[in-house]
Amino acid sequence: MFSNIDFSITKDKTIAFISSYDEVCGNATYTKQLMEQIKPYFKSVHIIKLDQSLIHSNYFNIVVDDVLSQVNKYDYINIQWEPGLFNKREKNSLKFVKKIIDTFSGKGMSITCHSLSFNPNILKMNKVIQYKITKILFPKVFKKTFINNFFYQNLLIRYLNKCYQKKNISLIFHSKEIANAVKSFINIPIYYHPIISATNDDIKKYNAPETRDNIITKYNLDKTKKYIGIFGFYGFYKGTDVVIKAMKFLPKDYHLILCSNVHPTNNSKIRKIIIEYKNGSSNINIEQ
Image (cartoon, rainbow, N blue to C red; front, side):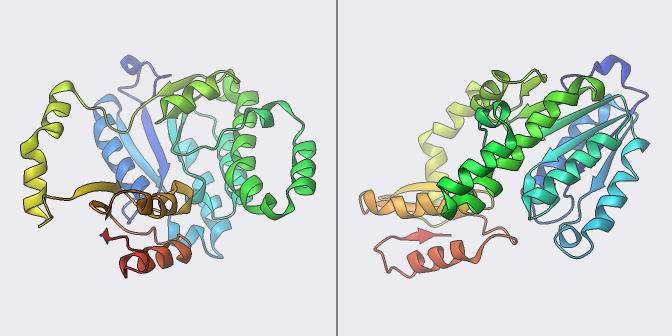
């Protein structure tokens, strides 16, 4: 997890994770498991909770001040970077994380990037030029595509590239492709850490015919159908709508199973698409 840490010298050190926690959120669940795994290597493990009900309310600035007041209580911190966890507005989210980085004066910081729309051009071009060109040429997609999806995220990467040595910062990615892409353009120490690693024995077990039979029986599914599953909270930024709409191009015996639900903070449009398809208006069956 903290690849820039020598664990032989951390037994008497403290660490804190900045993340959502103890609520219905994939990052919260991931962080909880992570904290349990890393306990043996530190004197104590802590959480600096990002309360989602407060962050997305008029109390946002109070949350920011509270987090900043805690970061220097610990030797190491890890930021679970999912832009929406820090604020719905990307601009506020970026400012929040930059304040954490500027405030922290401990021994080391690690930032786990759960999602990143990486655009290396932003690391090279003047941000004002990027901003103006996109706004002029693509006014309709400017706000959603340029600002919300990757402009501010890439500005964070560029900012980290300037201060990572002073703050002893490293980046961690769950995607090997993104990790390699970012590594090609910046100097920050970057590490690939998959959310789950399957052994050869695990793969054999998952692919065994009896595994599918057990699932079919347990959830009362049809053996004659072919099932495609989506796991975790879903929404537009994950491409869930694309998967749903793509089902119409597959044979009728292919069915889509949605495991989990729409994220509480997600746009209602994805709910509308799911309801529409579940009602059979498009000849696609979705089992949730």
